[in-house]
Image (cartoon, rainbow, N blue to C red):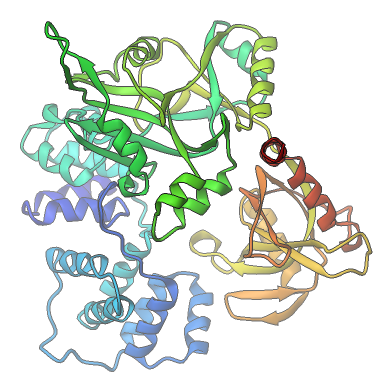
Length: 554
């Protein structure tokens, strides 16, 4: 039914509105890889709605908590608006709204916050309450009308008489549904080809938890390589043009000038003169902070990425490498239908030079070989392993058992909830985001120090039960956030610990998730900051850093 309604609507649109509509229905404003980013925060939207309807903050919070949805709040606020446009109220169209959203995204520099706010206010003044509801849902990426990108793809195939597999293949290659819909309309889906400077969806890995599970499932040799602790990136080169794209397909080229320069120099000898010729490619790999033959912790890479002005000194202090583990395009040839064994052979014949390197890998057949490789990976300072079926093709955007991740949680800590925030959408009205703390020291009466926030790991029923308990121990109600009496103890898993000024413990857990609600423990039995520090010190990247410092001192 949804597909039929959507198909009829898409058929009614012209070539200007059609690409905008499919983006909105796919819960996007701009295509993946677009330079445009909205950067409109919760507080800005609240301010605009309050000004339009002259609502005070208590009214705003009350309506938001009632619905747990910014769209519902916007519908209510615009229904109460008492501001009129200086000009005649404009009828909203897809193209006019899209143009103003691009104007918001393109507003940068001094005074940009005020300008963004004024543009948004103008759109909402011209909106009906229902239009405002869905406009804000689109801006927040929370459309929630029962459509997913897959259903939009089916609607495109139906309305333009195209094979849905062709639509999806084009989508995986181009990563931009606004381009795919126009190709489908013009019967040109076959022209959607992998080409440099157009980011494509990444192939994804499934997860297994033991070497035994992996060997029992595959029963054949696998390509085994380290799982690097960095930032996944595609490197595209055509001629002397080089671009890097993040996992979200955003252009991140400017953050890595030394990688760009190294890629631009990659050339192959041409025949018969042996002169060097440009080499075109699309690579899949990981940007890793790397020094003295060892990876630095992800926190070091973050330090560099957070620098507003990238200087030669920063580049020298936090050097990077780009570790290549796959290639999807090479000198005019699309390689994604070749096996990874063949793709690795092609990679081995390209003369890359540091800071661009190819990943180390080996064929493994036994549980013992996988365990040995895993221990080596962790000792060096990597996250674990990725194991790959040697005959597998590159499947853009697909997660399957062609690639398998194997990594272990670093440890768990027992911590107590000290604050909680309300969720939204299906978790509206439930406290589902928890701030937790450990003790300052082993004295059971010592101060509590926050160390992280987590919202994943619990079932909906567990969240409902914990919400009831938290509401019964409120110390302070701050609207969308409450401070609670420290009673509920959680066992929290994480990947690593890093130093951080965000929490008063001085540390933060990386990728925390709730493993258990420890009904058997009370606040006096939670872990102390001393345990946190011990885990931090034991991390291999800290040990290797101390070793390097000692060697330097000698």
